[in-house]
Structures are given as structure tokens and as C-alpha cells.
Length: 33
Image (spheres, rainbow, N blue to C red):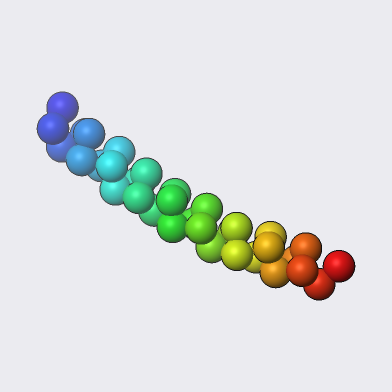
């Protein structure tokens, strides 16, 4: 269980990074309009 929850935390961390990167792309896209 501990190892599984640790893997979930790593995945969640990567998802947060991806979301932050996508947010910057979305903001830049709307700024060009």
C-alpha cells in the first residue's frame, strides 16, 4: 500500500507539472487573440 500510494503521489506531481505547462500555453494562446 505504501509503495502504491507513493507511486500515485509521483503521478499526481507529474500531472500538476503538466497542467501548469498547459496553463502557460493556454494563457499565451489567449493573449495572442
